[in-house]
Length: 80
Image (tube, rainbow, N blue to C red; front, top):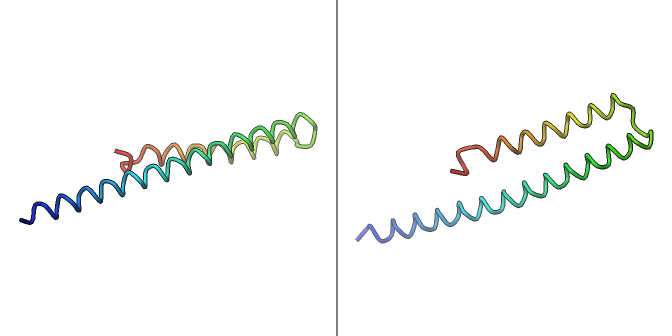
């Protein structure tokens, strides 16, 4: 008789994980879009002469680190 409640609990937990994954994936997609927009703005400001090369490199590095962090999170066991 205990098999049915356990089955329900497992299904609910599985559904919750699926919802969490969807929510996280949406957040990651938004973050990636923001990073791309920031890169575009940085490059535009650099071309306009509003940013020095050193500042541009520093900002690009920060974006690279954020991008790498997102990639790392996507590869964690949570997604398996």
